[in-house]
Amino acid sequence: MIYFVGAGPGAADLITVRGWNLLKEANVIIYAGSLVNKQLLESAKAECRIYNSASMTLEEVIAVMKAAEEKGEMTVRLHTGDPSIYGAVREQMDLLSKADIPYEMVPGVSSFCGAAAALKAEYTLPDVSQTVIITRMAGRTPVPEKEEISLLASHGATMAIFLSTGLLVPLRERLIIGGYQEDTPAAIVYKATWPEEQIFYGTVGNLPEIAEKNKITKTALILVGDFLGDAYERSKLYDPAFSHEFREAKK
Ligand code: SAH
Image (cartoon, rainbow, N blue to C red; front, side):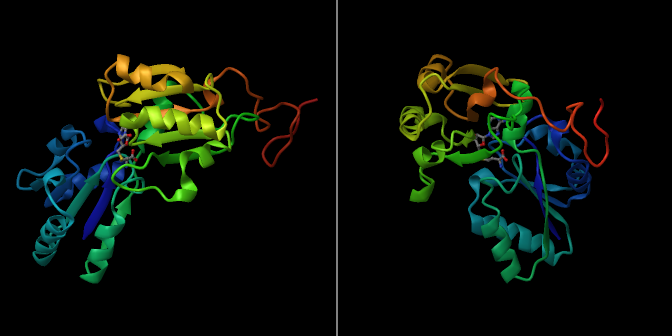
């Protein structure tokens, strides 16, 4: 059996209990070397074989999984954050299906949730935004034209932008073309939940300058939107004047 496990955003204790238990049982662990916290590997059994996928191709990863499967062993494929976000897991799962190898996925805390915790922020504030857009600038992986940043920005929703720290000048341009103001609040969160975590507050207009000044070039998320501002409405759910299934309105 192969388990695709979300390692969480950084801090080792942010893996799920399920993921942790699987790590302790695994005969083989293949981890995404660049972003998975190596502390997690310390919980592996002494005889566990551990591979860093950073230097491997898809075919090499699958070959390791197949070999383990033939011996009746259990493999954990450890991905950073949650496997479903920029995890390149679909291609692995499809090859495993073809080879009749069973697999399961175990969710993890994505870095955009880790970043919200770092910022002590709520992405979905009443009267501000009720939508979170998870996206990226095109890099070597292209982004479909209809998802171009300015089109997404036109909603004025909360945006969590991955994999784009090296592209902040064109990102700013696309955000402004899409309708954000230069002074729309923005933040850069570097290595959320790691000991080296750093938070920089700014605006859409000065994102590139903040990153340059602080030498942030990777492993960061760009958060954009008025959720970082001061204005919002109270929730209806906890409003004394509001009745719902579990509570009568107070007079
Ligand atoms: N599956 C992961 C994302 C992998 S893509 C997840 O759910 O978070 C890698 C990108 O994620 C990085 O370029 C960066 O933009 C972001 N990232 C991953 N870990 C991060 C962290 N701890 N803090 C800030 N950004 C992070």
